[in-house]
Length: 159
Image 1 (spheres, helix red, strand yellow):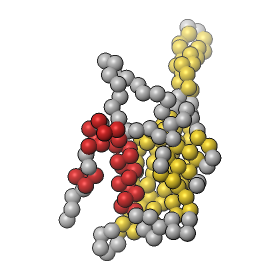
Image 2 (spheres, helix red, strand yellow):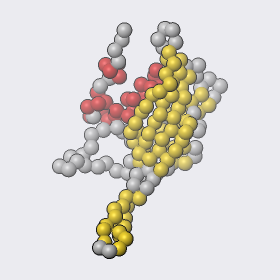
Image 3 (cartoon, one colour):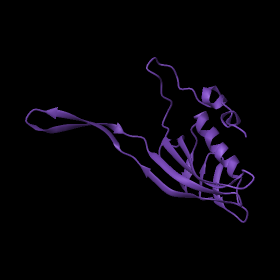
Image 4 (cartoon, one colour):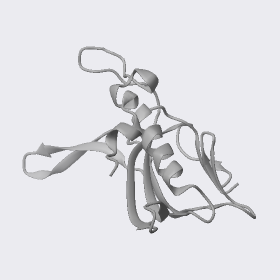
């Protein structure tokens, strides 16, 4: 296994090729500068920022169901459930990551309208713990999140 996100495995086998590419991650300090009269600003370090990770996956219908893979990632993002993201043998960050963005590009269609190939770019952010709104309400994830109830088929128009 090259990488994984929860139960989804990125791997190469005799009948499946699904490998991450263009892997990157970054993290930065959360800080503010404080003006000082007649001098350089002071720096107040608030803490660490979340670890951001991204990569792309090239999908090829000879090895995976391109349409099903795109649908999987869109639904996974819409449910807003964090899961363990492993790259190689390493889990980066606090243990879980939230899929925050799915971008599909380079779609190649066959004559019957099925997907021959596509590229899916995925972005994740480190998920340390559940936050709350200004009013103190807990975050909504999983089946309770409104966007998760929107079925992928309802967002697509058939011809």
